Structures are given as structure tokens and as C-alpha cells.
Length: 320
Image (cartoon, rainbow, N blue to C red):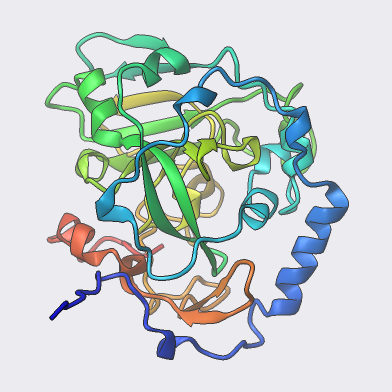
């Protein structure tokens, strides 16, 4: 007899809850309509990507089932946050201005030897794989994405950090001439560049994934090309896009959103349905592309992989 064992993050259909007023379907559809008005990403205008031949990559069998259907690519690429290119969700057309070649990543800080490496040279040093992960935005919407990339621990091995490196600090570009959201004005006054960080233990966890592709091809510009990170147990603002610098540091990094509003966006940002955002509930989430509301799970359902990382940190604000 075949016995199917469900993974910790799989969500039974009977737990799907009715649509509610908070972040309701009308609001979601209005956002998608705004994306349409702003213009969907046009593949015909895509910059030539020399890594195209590396995709699709072989799937990692450990991460083939996220518990619900993969979100249609058209929603993923055309409804997301990328404040470097504007404050609306419909930034796909504007994000086409992102220049992804040449692209270099500086690796510095507490390492044996600081280096700067081009994205295509980095790709030669790793083996790409596909992983299907759930994604949970702090704004209480979610999706499922077939990411392609490599485990963050492989980048750590390349960097060779020293023993006193306790954290990893990530930084994205700062180019107001290219990125309209960084130009003078409301969001141009933000503390660019976008910065985020995690502990060395989090960086070495198997779930932490350096993303270079999605949907069987190089990752779209609107999703953070040519390289970003994804940590499926954390709120999405932790998964920094378009990385140009990775620093191994002794002191805890302060992310851009934490700089702006530490009472709402902290360092840890682990998903927890029982800890509300100061301005809305995190108990449930709206599935992008379907309008369904489903209950949110602790650590976004990945607790079996990551809960042990936070043992002894009960006094920290782990869930914001």
C-alpha cells in the first residue's frame, strides 16, 4: 500500500477560508488592473542574457511540492514590489530599464580575500537547480514560485568568511538615472540603496536560496534580475533583489525598511499568523491569481527546517 507523507508546509484544501474584507479580492484585482495600465513586461524587449542556455535547470526533488499550485507567471512578474522602479505593484514595464549586463557582485568584509565577480563567472562556479517555494508578503498576499538558483551556502563557500563573521549584509544598486524610484521625490528620499541582512546560521540553512531564474528561464527584471535571494519562511521584504554586494560582518545589519520604520519591519521578519503587523492581521493571506484566502502558517509552513535557528532567542522580535 502506498502511503503519502505530507510535508510540513502542505495545506489541506479543507483549511481554505472564505474571502474576507481585509485585502479582499477587489483590492487585489484593482492592483492587477493597475499593473495592466502600467504595462506588462514585454519579452520582445528583453535584454540578451548570456545565461539563457542554463535554463531550465534540473529540479531538486526535496522541493517539488509547495502544497498548492504554482502561481501563473503573468501574475508573478506583473504584481510585485520593487520600489527602485516605483511604488505601485505594476512596475514591470519600468523595470525593463534595469541593465543586467555587465553585472558584478562584490564580496567583502570579514573574508580571507575580498573579491568582485561577474554574474556569469559566478554561475560557472555553482550548479543550478529548481526549487518550488511558497512566498509570503508582509502585506498578507502570497504566491508559489518555481525558482532556479543555488543554495546560499555555496556562495559562503566561495567567500570563505572568517570565524568572527556573524551576519551577512546584502546591498542592491543605487542608480537614479536608471531606476525612477530612486530619483528625487518621496521614494527618492529613502535611504538607498536597499539593504538587508541575515545571520550566518540563516545563510547556511538549506532553504536559503540565491535566485538567478524562475519559470525555467533567467529571472525577470521585475522579479530582481540577475540575482536575488529567497527565504520562504520570512516575509518577502527580506528577500532582497538585484544584489551587487555581499558583506560578511560582525554587527547586525539594519535593513532599509527597518531604518524607515523599525516598529513595523524588524531584522528577523519570520512569518507568524499570531503576531499581527501593527496595521493589519497576519492570520491569513490572499493567494495571488485566485483571490482565495487561506490561513497563514508559522514560518510559512517551513518550521521543520528553520525553527531550531531561533532556539534561545525568545526575547527577540522574531516575527516582525
